Image 1: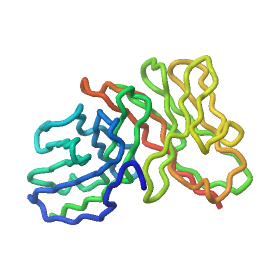
Image 2: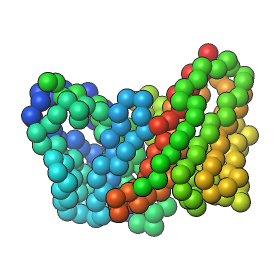
Image 3: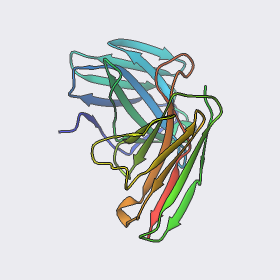
Length: 111
Length: 116
């Protein structure tokens, strides 16, 4: 079993939809949770970072962490065609020694 | 946030040859990281490069296959040696955050390697 599981998609939604992207994990030592966006032929760029449990909002993006369920989510409101990309979750353990990435979910937002 | 320049952006190489990938950061950083991203798979850390010391390799990666140089605090190279088609992948260098005051990593644009 992988330490981090992420549905690869692809996920196709119409413009304006609310998008929900998710990851599950097995290592309870993970404390730092991140979401990256990766456009085609580009490196990943950090979108959101959350420490431990809770929610964090940044514009149209909301990150949620539920440590009891070992489940994290990224919500995108009012999705735009420019949001079409691969979204990777990542998490780091307490000591910051190990960061594990999900395989990424491909998202297509249709105009 | 740091800006990372990585080159080449892509290359097609013959099996048995070697390719050196360069990574330049616009600020001094202690650690630089090299990742591999294979299609449909998660980013996998190859090694961590500190200036003035040998790189630290992750399980499954060895120095003979992926030699790394780190001559100063802004530059690093990764060489993929004696390449086979299985080495076809995207290779990314990265540095630690902060980015906008957050924890995380900044990545270069990657090198898309195809071995034929």
